[in-house]
Image: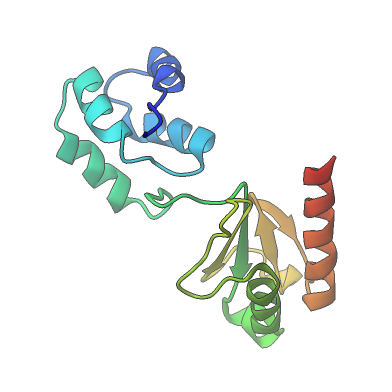
Length: 158
């Protein structure tokens, strides 16, 4: 038996936006679910009086939107030039190894962590850098990454 999708959070979002503010609506939906569930597209199309393909095209055009579930903690590991030469790859390898992830499998089964690589986080002077839900963690190394994971796991255990 499949669980019925609860559209009430989406209805609240729609109350706060103009019908033409598709990007802002999708951003708010993604903030709640950490991705854009497939169930929202036909629902939004009907509510906004537009085509499902239009909404889907916006969601797939912008890299910031995800159609795949992401973890509660999205860890972005910078591999731009400054971070790379300051050894960001061992940090990425540690995170993937510790969390059982790979280049193809980026989110843990419990939806707690997602690890992504990005080309630049714009904090080159602090390299190597990670962000966790857009909070910058500077001058990282595998040991600091281990401490950060431990801290996040302890936060969840509280």
